[in-house]
Length: 258
Image 1 (spheres, one colour):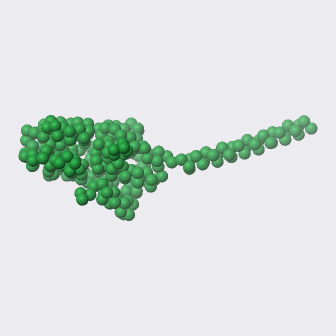
Image 2 (cartoon, rainbow, N blue to C red):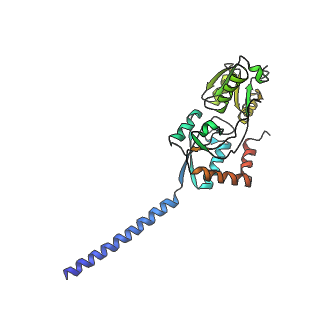
Image 3 (cartoon, helix red, strand yellow):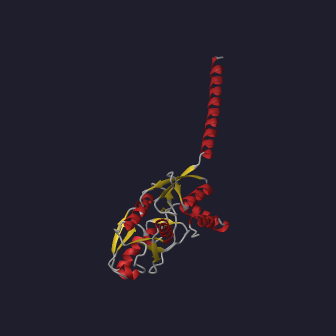
């Protein structure tokens, strides 16, 4: 009799454990499907109209809208990390973030260290000067001090101008806003920037400027760690956004000159 009682107790315990196991598995499945995975993005939020902060300190801009669109389409929750532009590539290489969206040109040099999406925008470069400045062309820059942001394609462009066109002094700073302050304070003679960004500062600060005709820069791309499986997924979203007009809608909102 005791033997059968023992067998019955073991059977009951086994059934209870199995039931608990099923409930635990069900709870785990619900947690996995109910919580969005986080997509970590890095940017340098001093580059309007691509990325900056509004008066409340919230991120805004073309790249911010594009990043949110991509995250929504892929089912991620977007987390944005603000850092200096010249530290963005390192953040990818050290796997601290999943992608960089920061008005970054997809240069061959950068492609040695990171992977890029298809290009989503192309602006070109521009030099900003004070109102009524006598600097109207690249040749007028001889002997002048040109300001650039560290780590940007414009820093490389200024070095190319110095080596191949006219002799200039180059002053590099961390931040695009600081660059404009350097110009307004007469510590530099011109600021070298992405054209879309430059036009915003020209209108806001009542400045002048002219296009750089010496170079044709690559377009902007979204950067990823080497070998990231996100590249193919994001490219598919960019293609769809191009076809359904969503990308143009964002450009009209943030990059229109009207």
